[in-house]
Image (tube, rainbow, N blue to C red):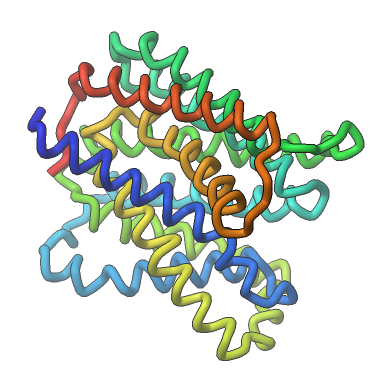
Length: 305
């Protein structure tokens, strides 16, 4: 493994965590009257179209039937995650979905054990548990028992979390077989294209497409921002890192996003830190630093160019 590849991948994921953290505030600027699944489908479609010229320039358009099927499966996983998230948010709070999402890196490690067996997996388990515990404290803050999610919301978003957990290790596994040689641009383009098609077809049947008629110019501007920075850039950085860093370590950067959101509240919004938040921030820092050190010692199965 090249030192520059390792450092670049981790720096890219640090930027990924910042972009994900910023996306929550940006998403709140879009009118709440527009169907969120429609918005996500449009975001993914716009990202795919932006990447199309680059894909043609790189000549990464060759596709086999198995390759097409692989991208369709990965796109379906994306659509399942986003669809389940927005359905769950109708019945529970963002704090509860955020808490459940902290399980995704651990579930990713479980899928990684099956699809990409690696002797370093056990070394990464404890740091991930520490970071996950810290993230839970940051997300929950002062949430009380009355805010517990409904069984339906847990079931629906649980399926979405499983889909997102499977996404990274399955991407890496497919890139060793039917998607061999596919770079970050090609992976991002095809997966987002299929994800967009699944979501937009769903909106066609559900009637959610009608809410698109109320899109304003301001909504369109924020949609472009979310598409470019919160979707396109983050998924390209994700696919660039997968293969240099273990998939479970890559997705663990979501814990840093949680920490960045909390720091924003402390430093920018001048909200005094709660004791549990301070403990959570320390745990996330310790867990991620330990995870970084353990991933540095581990050699990946393949290195993505």
